[in-house]
Image 1 (cartoon, one colour):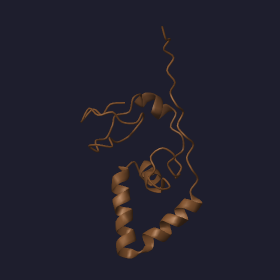
Image 2 (cartoon, rainbow, N blue to C red):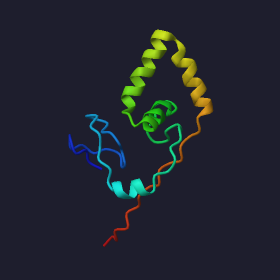
Image 3 (cartoon, rainbow, N blue to C red):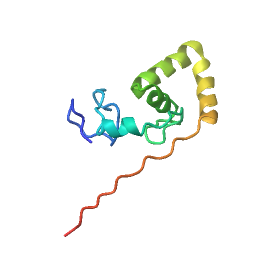
Length: 109
């Protein structure tokens, strides 16, 4: 998948560009609206730095994961509660199922 703003290659089905932070348009919005599953707060299995907590929260609230990571770091440094909350979330939140990989059906010649 290519970012519409900076034209760099990003992960498939990303909501935000990892390079410029631009929001990405849905590939098929009518199908997504028709089959919208119930949202669950889970740890991310694809976009994680340590345990996927920040990316999971960002996905749940439809935010950029970098913003959530910065806020979490500020909570950790300023209040001291960020570390304890992160450990609790790591234990309590389930890991999201891995995204179905898209396989290419192109024939080799």
